[in-house]
Image 1 (tube, one colour):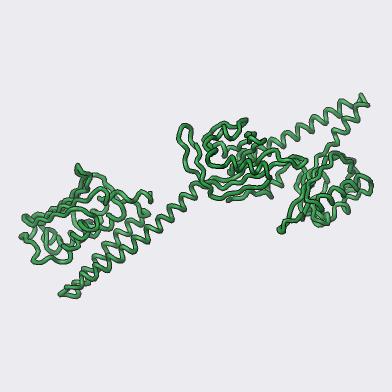
Image 2: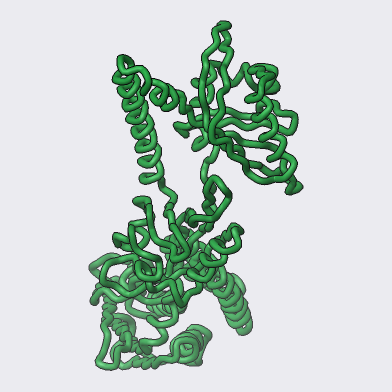
Length: 479
């Protein structure tokens, strides 16, 4: 799961935040805190807070006691109102009033290692209250308070905008019925553009009820633990008016607590990992399929080598035949590899095998029909054997010979390939059934479960009929 960059969020927060270790030394501070204390973090880091900003009075003791309570108990603590003057680096003293929230942060061993402070400067509010006894200055004090309020609202709006447009999705659910109070743009896209703000999740996303996600939210809200998942399968209606579709998410549910530590809602964050999960699945299927193909191809090569050499009278000729057949296999594999082992158009196969011959001798054509990977390899061998025979003994062995190759689908959805040779040497059937002829029958009738008709009356005419299931079905998992 791609994690949020909390360091950047920490830096972007408009409210002052800082973190101290167990010795009350500065570990982190955001720009808003630096601006309040008028000191860059480089001058704060590693120094004790009370060494830099001493206060031996009651307010200083209250602040120290709050830190020590959090570190000792691991429980958050809030100081609703504290007067804590700041001595700025130039030596001037500014008297400020604060509300401070102290939150424990655990280390790797689960014990409290740090305390984080978030402060809100309420000085203007205090001064305005004091100004109620000074009529002349009350207007200016009220004006300053209004201006400060507007600045705070603007900063909060900017922070909200950043979350609204973030690539990760976010949502805020409030109360025990998990009412949506905020959804980021990416979350809205994830759920098909539905406007769910103000609705409980069971009503807003009814499809998730039976999938157990509402039960998980109930446990997070009730028990306060964080729930996280990677690549979780969720059925979501992510397009208006369409049934729920399989979606894969990395997400977490985090309890939201108020200042007193009570759980008030659940913060939802995550990333849509659907495309990545599907890509991984396709890759796995492709690798499995490729392994299967390689094993089959090796078996085919072994059979070709054995049959080619078994009854060979001329070793040199047998070697050439073997190399040519393996080359035909290699060409078919290259074609499939270029298409990531998806379907291949039958016309490309025919063109690949017959491209060496001129159009005055060879013509071929037919509708655009695709064949699966298994049929591609098988037909590459068949076309190679027919072409080799035509060059050695048939129509392509003489200049006046011609070859026509056509293909179509018949009424039974079979792929029919017709190979017609004319004007070649005087036709005659083979004196004996050689390996080429046996290979044609082995591939067409055996491997593809089709039919093969050979006629030598007026030159070789071959009719190949391959069932639809053999050349089209069984490849859907790769698409």
